[in-house]
Image (cartoon, rainbow, N blue to C red; front, side, top):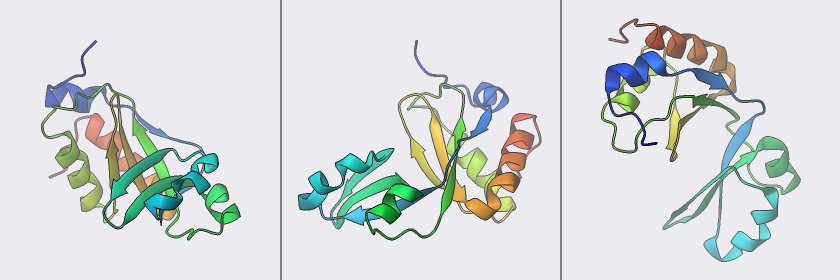
Length: 137
């Protein structure tokens, strides 16, 4: 089943889910990736400077990788299309209006938003308000 592209339907259908655990973004040399795969990153992205790993904080600490800033992951439980227009802008605006930074991963089925741990409850409230039809502007 293809993902949803209609922005109004995406926003009204999205169910923000605060995922258990805390996460950090780390960078390791691409040539050393095999030394870190056992840490079971929940995400990876290759940049020219190195391989970014998104790791549970405990795994990063065990590997003695930088463990700041600590983030929580919010998954938007709606099957958004990779071709949908405006969803990221809508939730970024809602979070920005609350002064909350967001690092976004758009995966095949869902969008995942990483926010500072201290802001997780406010981020959830802002996303729930957006889904309930409260305009972020």
